[in-house]
Image (tube, rainbow, N blue to C red; front, side, top):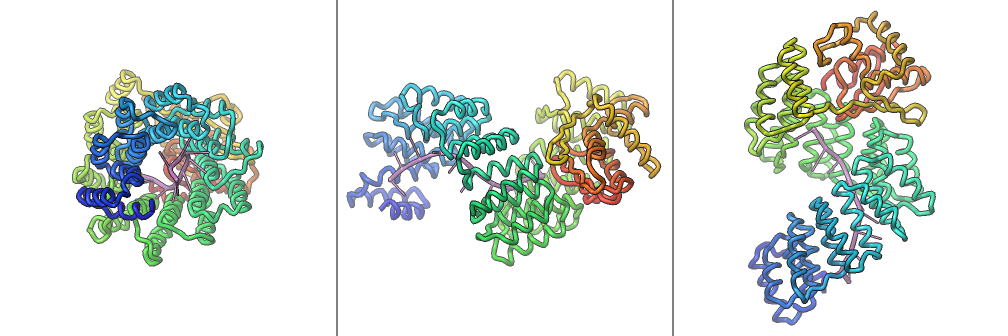
Length: 569
DNA sequence: CTAGGGTTAG
């Protein structure tokens, strides 16, 4: 019965269809038991008709709940909150636990934290707070809105826990940029006797990926195999993503090739992205072409992944061609701001600043700050002061207050020795109270993660090691690129400032603490700077070490004096 | 059967 109605509803494309169906249900006497399904569908498809019906019947809680649930999954989940408040004023609508549950779901989707706090107190007032399912929904709403402390507190105080609430907190922490805590809880969950399921491992894998901890990731994958969770396609996708983000393309590809379940477009997209971020641009494009042959129609993420792959490998012409295919109409994929962003980056990095500029000027959607920031970044690489000023004027107009762009502009001036302009930018930064995001790097040595912060001068042993490194690579032609230092200080001090970059500290630490045949793996939170990039290349040659650096957006694999990015980044 | 937790992305 319910299923038949659902199928009919799915075929209702217009309001007139909906009304016809409603008339049919009323005349055949089926309406009383199908009304909830009916109004939920109207609400979910953003039709005002649900509210209209609601006003013309003596509404009961069931209808109210159905509409809130529908609105919560609609394009405007915030409407559910309004509707909840309206219903509260009607005597015939007494909220039950489900009313609160659906409303909280709407809060989670709308990222509405204040409303979540309000519903929380109402849940207490109505006496529903002991409901474990409702507690989990509440926890999830807090976590998604970024209130991880409150989510964590709820979790810690739960008298009874089940797998689902562990999942909610682990996923919440992983997605809320607290992967270390997520991983900690994942381990504790197993210790106290819960069996992680396919949803739990998604959160755990995401945490491993963020931390770049392959060892942990591999452990989770082993667990997945023992539990046969790899029959779940989403799990496989995330395993691939984890290996990719840890720099292990071959392992990701192995998972891709040996999947026991059906692949989807997402599977291909993930693998294309993994190849791309690891600098395997040609392989990524091969796979992009392969997917159509296997009957998977590339979607907007497929195109984005392929474009990113071109970007990371410096395949400018291929990227431009791909973008043309996408926009020519034969693909039926509408480019989003991210596609334009990638194109601006691709053109900008290869020095085609004017073309990048004209892309920004020509796009049909309003350009966002990231587009201009990207162009500004390219201006820095090519020292184009005029274009840089144009871009930063736009950014000021748009009211952007990001620290990165002022740092960039100041760097561009510094590279041109325009110290007066540098001073003005620094002044603006002081007035706006802009602080540079501190750069830090992790290095994994024997499974232990060590963290180094930019400018940390407390490691005198590393400093000595760095001096030795600098001496040795200077014999091989290293010249410090002091254009990356902000202030107008002497050459010697600039070289000194450069040597405290966190990735160099991590490098020195790695060289001391590991044996000669071990690959050094460094994770950086920002993009690697040009000078550090040069140093890594030379160290890979002089010390005969493979070094892999994961920066904010991609991997750099240094071997025998060369980088996998072919210096295109 | 009106409940809670989940994939790729400049």
